[in-house]
Image 1 (cartoon, one colour):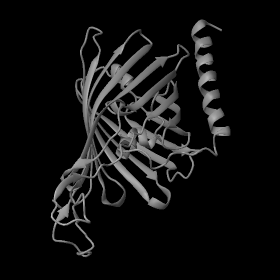
Image 2 (tube, helix red, strand yellow):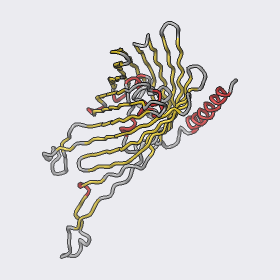
Image 3 (spheres, rainbow, N blue to C red):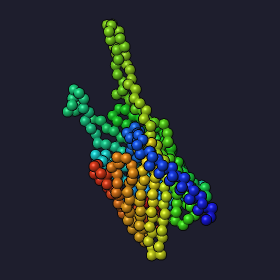
Image 4 (cartoon, helix red, strand yellow):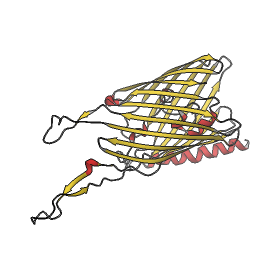
Length: 346
């Protein structure tokens, strides 16, 4: 057994032992569900990855890598872009746009992305006007990101995202800065890759705004004092949904133009129990893709489950390609989600 194989086996043993220990012995612990802000950051990106059940940390090799594992950015050989628009649960609109550019001469690669979740305008309802006061309010969550990745060796890559996160509802707004750090390692065992990523590391969000301003009477017992002193209601700070994710991907090539990829990710979020994502992709003649997966296996009270998808890659001219991917995800009692992703390579 050569040195690369021994290192790979050791890493897998250490990481899976710790994860399975939490899975088996930590099942009764509190999961902290509903205790984090910016939950839109937990919605996966890309029909390809979601068709594979979100098992993508070690696969990441297109522009959606900016979400799953920024180290995968360094494996993209040409300039590329991706756009996705999803009709999420309860009329929520989810949008993602990203672009990547390799710098050349082993200087690394850079990327930019924007991710936004919005809801339709809603009527403002109060105790006095339960049917609506005539006003409307809106809500939106947005993240703007800048990415950089580089191949440190021919097998090992590292990457990072710097993200500005903002959430707004009516006149209240909260913002923060966060970072993602990822690594990708080609083990030397033919077709086997290891990926790891820590996402959303940064300070929490605390809402502030004009609707939190109130008039306060500091001495309501006595008359003649100022009963219109301006005060401000203070909201709590809620942490970001920090997540640690470790993945394996194994690709098998055949002489007949077929390629099969098997992937598995282990997740350790701060606001839910540990879980596993499983996925597979069959590539036919570098043009047609069929996918299936299972998301959030072993997670407590999860509504996610079976996923399926397909994709078509069409060469336009030269090295330019257009790629259209579709994914279906079963969300249990919440119904199902369909998504389409458009990708371009130049």
